[in-house]
Image (cartoon, rainbow, N blue to C red; front, side, top):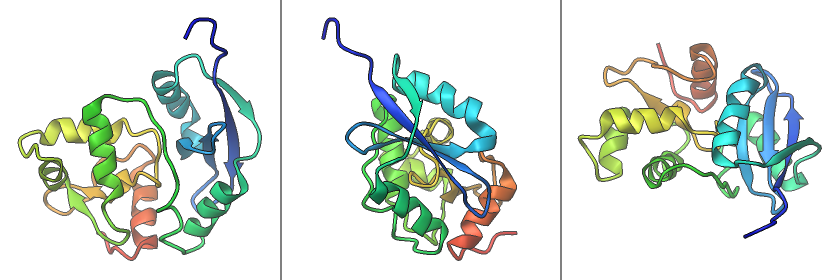
Length: 174
């Protein structure tokens, strides 16, 4: 598309029990990014990769999207299930992110189980890397992936936040 106008994305800020979240939506109401405010630089970097040339403006997310995020943090663990997400990424990354969305709230998977779920059981490391490049935290629940020995492993939002998110979903973690 020659001379196409740059896409405009809206950045909303929502208070949660574990810090302010940054919620980015497009003109159709699809979620393009969600991250914690203390990781805004990371979110911006991922957005540039997934939506090159997009213009980010402050504003409000569509009411239904905003309510879903608030409801999830308020205890309605199914509130995010129906939200539409839209990302860039490679075909492999998008497959991993879709598999993450299939992990029910209150359950965890290891990186090996995640790789097996996408039909690439030997791609554990690649699945882990794709997990780490997920631009839509919580809705695409990368926090539900743990180490093979059951321990919490890396989370872009910090391990204490990952522990809170899992505890919020009823998962006991050491």
